[in-house]
Structure formats: C-alpha cells, structure tokens
Length: 373
Ligand SMILES: *Cc1c(COP(=O)(O)O)cnc(C)c1O
Image (cartoon, rainbow, N blue to C red; front, side, top):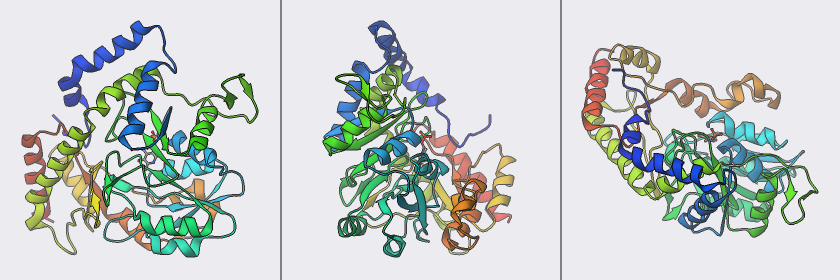
C-alpha cells in the first residue's frame, strides 16, 4: 500500500464514534448554519488563544481576506508579506483589493526576514502579514516595533501554526488579528473546509461578523457596506470543537514524528546534502509539515516513488514567479533565498497518526536512496 504524505484515515478510525456523533448531534439539532456549534467553537478557540474574540469563516483564504478588510485594508493599500508561502496568502491580499509587497526569507528557517521589512514600507503600507510557515512563528517583536512606529496593522497567517508558541506566546495572539485555516491537512483540520479570525479588538470582530454575513448589520439586517457570504457550517464547527480539545495531543504526536525523523536521519544529514528543519530561538514548532532540503530533491522524490512513498513540495513555485502575480513586477532573482528554496525543499510524510513502523520504512528507504545518489 502506498504511503501518502498525509492521510486522515487512521485518525478517522481512531475517532470515528466521536466524529459521527458530532455529525448526528448537528443533524438532530434543527439548526445547520450559525448555531450553537459555531458559537461554542468560536468561544473555545478564542479562549485557547487568550483572545477576546473569534469569528469563523468558510476557509483560511477568506479568513485572511476578511481579516484584512476588517482591519481596514482596501484598494490602494500595500501589505508586506513573503513570497515563500502557500499561494492563498497572496490570493487573499489580492482578494481584499490590496497590493502584496514581498520580502525574502531567512536561509536557516525559511521564515520572513524581518530585517528587510523596514525598507519595504512606503506611505501606502497598511499592514504586515507574517506567515508562521510549516509550524513555527516568524520573528514578531521587530514587526511589532515597526508596526507601532509606522501605524501599521499586523495580521498573522496562522494556517500552518495552530498551537505553535513563540517566546511562550501562542501563534495568533501576537498580531492585531490572526487568520486560521481548518483545511483537512492542517494541524487542526476539519472534515471539509473551514477558517477563523481571532482578535482581541472588539471592533475588528464586529467587522468580521458583518463581512462574513453579506455585510449585514445583524440588529436591523441592513447592508451598509456590501460584504461576503463566508460562513462555517455547524457540522464542521462541531467536529472542530471536539478536535480542538485534542489539539495539544495532535501536536505532541507531530513532535514525536519529527523527533523520530531527526534521530533516524541525523547521521546522513549535513551541509551540501540533506538538511533537516531547524527551529528558531524561542519557537516551539508544531510540524504542520516536515520540510527538508537537498540539492538533488527531484531525483530523491522520483526514487522514493519506487518504494511507494509519496513526498511533497511546499512550495515548488515562489508566488512572485507565478503568472498570476507577474504584474507585481518581481523579476526572477529578486528574492534569491525564496527561489533557491523552491528548488531544494521537499516534505516527508507527517501526521500524528503516522505509525512508528511506517515511519521506520520511510527512514530506511530514504537512507537507501541517499546512499545511492
Ligand atoms: C492552507 C493555507 C492557507 C489557505 O487556507 P484554505 O483553508 O485552504 O483557504 C493560507 N495560508 C497558508 C500559509 C496556508 O498553509
């Protein structure tokens, strides 16, 4: 049987009774949209982040888009982010009709190089959008200083970093707002699509609630500023509520998988060859994906297929080189670290229910492939 880079079926088998009970509970409740489960999940998800408010939405892309709009970002505004991210980060900025501005990432940990942000700020800059990539947080203190100095908002892209910590603070509690995705592969994943924005600013949350509900002001049901239809449904909310209570256990499971990879590959890793993930100082990584680097990445992926092991690339094309973003004017070579990483990174299978036996097979196969390069 093929080993997939991500697979939810073992987890479903372990949790089937609870998941199906969640579905039944909602179907029996007589309320399918914006009911008790959405309310309950929003309350507990806000509490998990020590934040006052959470508004759920239909996916992570819309969480970023509506989050930007709720912070007052719109046409003509610039948002500083990275190109070394999932395309939806940038699609969401475009969706808010703002202009993405890219800085490069750091060679060691692939995260936003915050030392480049200052020079990227213009009179049109409205917000900073750090991405907590692969499961660990970008460097937040210097971003906060810059934001305060220049009157900018910060929205964290937490789609890959549920429960990650940065100098003790949980991801999603450090910006003016934070956007989450509950796409099934994520650290907290639904059985379908989902997203949320967490904030401690009541006005931002008020805006979010209107934006996800056509722009309707919920007391009189009138639209002053047209919004969107971007709601999380009750079934996904109830499943997420139950899974949220296991989030810390999922994270422990991911860390155990990461530890076994590190132990099993330490002696074949090194400069110029296989490079294992490194954790930035102050970070507690949640390993959404386990991303390694090798100059002969494509060959390794091909060879591993012979062992029936699927590897993945996050991400093979830097966003600024995609045709859809050519108009932004970033030439090839303008973000050298991002472009180099795109040629070398790949990810090993990662999910909490990955068994030790399967992982052993992945490690020995990869060692085999590396020894024959
Ligand atoms: C998954 C992801 C998104 C988008 O989330 P969806 O729920 O798929 O819309 C945005 N940003 C990052 C970094 C992601 O990994």
